Length: 119
Image (cartoon, rainbow, N blue to C red; front, side, top):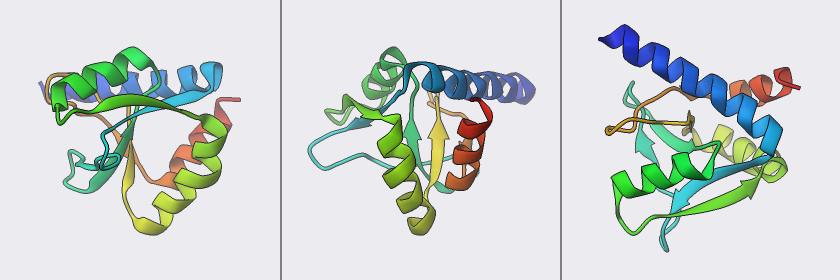
């Protein structure tokens, strides 16, 4: 069962990098207090992003807390959010899915590297 979840997470991560490079914006969920960080599977804080509006809307519905979906241009994410996250420490969650919203998280430099590799 773990291998199924891991392969699904890998597929979701691959989809994220492919879809974001094609469509440019990333999606996040937030409320009036800001974007929540959540614990990744390994127990570390993670700031999740999604590659499509539909994926982010599912996450907002599952988490609740009056979360709404917002888009962020990929350039802003790469130039501002990822460097800030690298300093502050949270990993970047990639297309978390399923009723428990699980998936892979990467350090900010790894996200930048993978985005560059999909060009």
